[in-house]
Structures are given as C-alpha cells and as structure tokens.
Image (cartoon, rainbow, N blue to C red):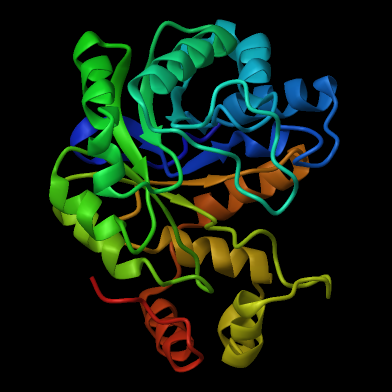
Length: 305
C-alpha cells in the first residue's frame, strides 16, 4: 500500500495524513442516517487499513465515540484522535437542523472529557477542541479555557484546539493558546480562506472540515448558496475529465496551509475514491489560480481578517 501524503499539524508536529476521517457520519439516528454497528465497524477498519491516521469525533455525535472505542480501540496506536468539549453532558439529541446545547463551564467540560475517554476506550486525546466557536468572553467567564489548559498540562489532552468560525475566529487566533484550528472550507465555501492562512502563520495546525462540500453537486438534489455558486462558476473546461467531487477535493488539498481534511462517509467505496483523489495531488497551479478567479467572480470570496 502506498503511504498517504502527510503534513505536520502545525506546532503539534503530529505527522497527520492529509485525508482524515470525520466520524460524525457514524453517529446514527435520530440526528443522522441509520447506520448499523456492522457498517460502523467496517468503515472504521477501512479508514485505518487505508492508512488514514486522523479521526475527528464529538460528544454530541450520537454513538460515534462509543463505536470508535468499541471497534478500533485496540488499534489506538494507529491514529490520532480528536474530540470536542462544551457539549452538554447527558443532553438528549437536538432535533435535526438545530444545534445541540453547549455549556462552557469547568464542571461540564471535565464530565465531558471523562465520558469521552471512557467511550473511546483511551486515557488521552491527541486534540481536545472547543465546539461551536464560543467567544473569548465565554471561554474565560467560567474557567473553560483554563480547565482545558489544565487537562493539557496533565497529559489528558496532548493539544488544545478550536472548532472555529467567524466572527470569533480572529479573536481565537489572537489569543495564541490554540494548537489546532478546525475550520470549514471548500471551493464553494471560501469565507474562511484568509483566516486559515492567518492561523497557520501563527503556527497552529489546520484541520479543514467540509472540504468535500457535503457531496458532489451531480445528483440534482443539492440546494443553497454553495451550489448556486457552483452553477454560476462554470468550471467545466477546467475539470479535464475530473468529476465535480474530485475537483472539489483536490481544490481543498491545494490550499497551501491545509494539514488535514476530514471527510466523512460510511461507504468503503467512497472512502477508497477519496484516498485515490488525495494521491493525485493538488490541482495544477494554473487550474487552481483560474478556479479561484472564477469563484471570486461568482461570490465565493474569502472574508478579510
């Protein structure tokens, strides 16, 4: 098996594969699609067998953490594990389309991490991330940030991260305490492109989510501003035989500051295809430049820091 390309995750120096796995896909109902235990076991082993070494999950991703611990806990040395904090421990799943409740207090964070470790069958997390991009004021008000930094000093969490978005992301970078940022980005969601560069300049590791744009716009079912942009851009002459999904993924991999791109799936064939796309490398420089020019013109424009 050809080893997947890796990059150091910023100052953590963790050598992560440029394709990671987003384990929200195995959370199951009611928040997600029905996923059987057998499907979850199969895809998790397929992820590791493909050479992927970065897995991202969360307390509020249904049974995702339990399934990781149950099915690949005995392969813990093969992957870096990232989960999240601030999710309200014991809360019922939020209805579809709504955000699960989050409480950024010392007590809730400690309970959440304890629960995650038990579910994941591990005694440490490689990256502990704050979920849903809380403000600096929220992080400091009830000791949330200091609690996570204590967990880092104790070795329970090797590194501290932020699942961040605008408008709070600029403050997060300026704080200088986050080792890793997880940031949404794709060809049709470029609002955070300059913030990714700013976080990387500060030495942080960059984990991109949404880099596959939630599936290719080829089945006629996608709606919303992202796919409106895709339709306006008219990139057909740049695809050169690529599918839309291949182009979008390679566009994401082309960002010079990306370290890993977490993509979720429960389909081993889709996983294999994503791995093959990664192996093809970034887009040719001239194609990448022209694609960004057209995307800018169609409204997929980075916001300034």
